[in-house]
Amino acid sequence: MAKENSENPRFICGLHATLHVISGKWKPLILFFLNKGPTRYGELKRSVRGVSDKMLIQQLKELESDGIVQRTDYGEIPLRVDYSLTTFGASLVRAMEPLCGWGEEHEEDIAAAMDRRKTSRQEAKPV
Amino acid sequence: MAKENSENPRFICGLHATLHVISGKWKPLILFFLNKGPTRYGELKRSVRGVSDKMLIQQLKELESDGIVQRTDYGEIPLRVDYSLTTFGASLVRAMEPLCGWGEEHEEDIAAAMDRRKTSRQEAKPV
DNA sequence: ACGGGTACTTACCAAAAGGTGCATACTTGA
DNA sequence: TCAAGTATGCACCTTTTGGTAAGTACCCGT
Image (cartoon, rainbow over all chains, first blue to last red; front, side, top):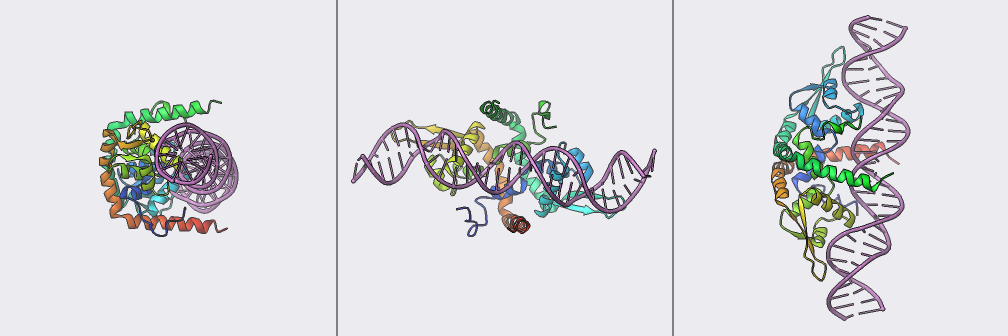
């Protein structure tokens, strides 16, 4: 039942495919900052507040292996690496814009709904 | 460190917010089918192949609490319920379209990248 | 009365995602 | 030499998510 990926390794709709690329707790943030231009690892880490090294590296690697971001090692004496969007990545970011817009417009409703769910979960597990 | 949601309960960018609404293993699929029109529970279950009752109901409830879908109980003698997109939900689906398009165009690259990751994970844990 | 269909609900479990913190290897500045 | 900074790796653990399987309550046809 869990192995029917032999016949249809593809997705139901394109969104399904896209979500595999952009979902991950820090990916939208990373994409958001990289969209502003190439960013050094440490700089990125300071921008994406709250992310740990492990998570940042992990998500960057995934984005890299998906061809969304590009890692550049300058091979310089004091370690120097930066990350930037590939052309492919830039096209993704462009396609994401309407969804960003929608999210911005309805941020409050979404936040309210999230709070509602968070609250009821807390009520379910009191102590 | 994990409780800094007191000052900024909002999101970094709209995408961040949107992803909270559409991420969930079956949500894109559900949205995809509901976009075709109101659908009865059982019908939806048969459409979204492989989903269990628990998951389908759970995701529908979340979408409902987010105001994306609408549950209609016809109160008829043999139980009859259907689900449809709200106006809000329809606007979300519209905003999702470019991302769907991007996903469709690059389905193969995405699938290839996913396979690459799946394979290396299997190699890492042989037995 | 029984099997099957409707729309769920629940308890229990496994897998995936994410978090913490320490370790590396190499640097520069004090 | 010691601390601090660069970019990463790794082991371990918790949280979240998803899956399995069973049960409920109602109805219908046989």
